[in-house]
Image 1 (tube, rainbow, N blue to C red):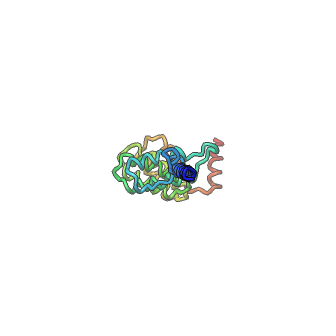
Image 2: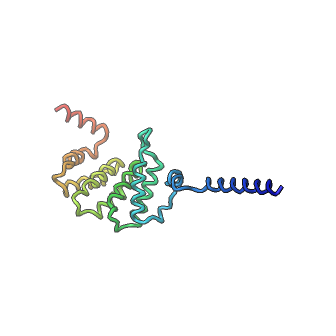
Image 3: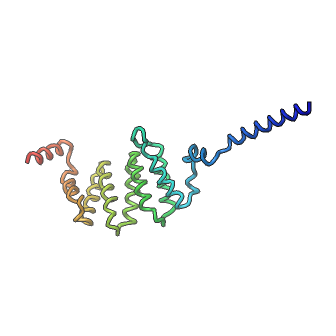
Length: 193
């Protein structure tokens, strides 16, 4: 009877140990299942930047080739946190670009413009800032903020008169306040020449 009880106890002990180990998250299953359940508030500058890069790679669903709202939202939130928490980061401008693109993908144009405007202000001496300025002008135009779009286009023309986008901006300034009907007529006349 003692041997039977000892054998039964051993089986129960082994079974409980195996069950316990199966429930423990291993490095592999943790990274697969819970990689997106993170607290970005605890990330260092570099950790948060790496997380942003990881999210950006997941932003397009590989089957449908469409933006995933879940990862776009996480990317925007992580970018906003990075911008707020690490103002001296060497990754700051790139993070702002990623955040702006995520906001645009989520149709949060006001947030995209806010991030772009911050980047433009912080990098105004950099000649490549015209990229962000072009996107901001386009977004103002898209949001039907005609006066802000006009000012944004004029700023680009003034600061970067030789940039290839200036020709298009000058043309857009001619048509900015036209109604849809006026715009169609304008292009019909222009194409007839």
